[in-house]
Amino acid sequence: MASTAAPAPSAPAQAQSAEQLRRLAAELRLLAAQVRVGEARETPEEFDRERFWRRLNEAAVTVAGQATTLTAVFRTPLPAAQETQAVCEQVHAAIKALTAVYYSLPKDQGITLRKLVRGSTLDIVDGMAQLVEALLIAPAQSTENSDLISYNSVWVMCQQVPQIPRDNKAAALLMLTKSVDFVKDAHEEMEQAVEECDPYSGLLNDSEEDSRNDEDVLGFPSNRDVYWSEEDQELIIPCLALVRASKACLKKIRILVAENGKKDQVAQLDDIVDISEEISPSVDDLALSVYPPMCHLTVRINSAKLVSVVRKALEVTKASHVTPQPEDSWIPLLINAVDHCMNKIKELTQSEIEL
Image (tube, rainbow, N blue to C red):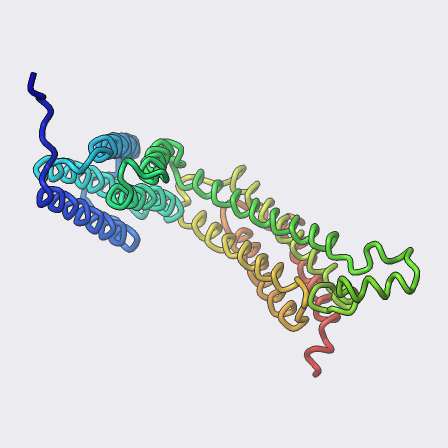
């Protein structure tokens, strides 16, 4: 009996299908670039929050389905050009629908919320583009299975859409929590580095001759590139205290937003998040500058930047609706704490300024 299997597409047809995939990948990359800079599209209609989230979830489900179809169709030799075109058009339409929902989210719903929705949308669009590119460069026989990895990535990102915060207060709390976690990790890494970078560890009870041999083999304590001097160690103490105060500041701000934040005060919540997000990068800069070989002037500069950001975050929070009693003592206490740390750092680095 003759086989009824459809013949494999010819080489020219395969090339045409591949070109259609390349065009789709380029179009998806273009859509992603537009989302990165695109603004909300104003409409005369009143914003319907429930309808927005329903549409966004439905769009994500559709994209996940198209990713499944795309992967299933192209895990065999490339199909005929007509079938390829149909699949590509469906994928493009699904992604366009997703981005259209994002554009319908007005700015007055909160910049922090829009950033989260935009980030999720971008992840999905970029993920779909990567999937298309993986299907082009990694056929089904590939041992790397990069197409399945890319498909799984798109599917997971679509599944996460329902987890996006539904209002700007919830979005603000999420971002503040991330900032707290980042600063907490940086502080723990600094403390661990102090514990692990003791230049005299294991040498205190050795004889002078053994110590001399250790110096030759390990480079301790003569190599200033891998350990802290006594002056360095003294300077690290107020730096660690400053990072602890920064962490305490973020925790307090997060508590105030959770307890007193109002969903309709979107602008003030955005301001609090914007300035608070500057704390973590400033902590990272300070943390990096205290590693040996330490430049005391750099430590002083980075400490001053961190103090400036923390003070501003406290001032913005104090002036907002989340602080119903601005005279509460914890804000002045934190300001005094960071100022004390900075004064100590200035004192210990004064000799660098005078050189």
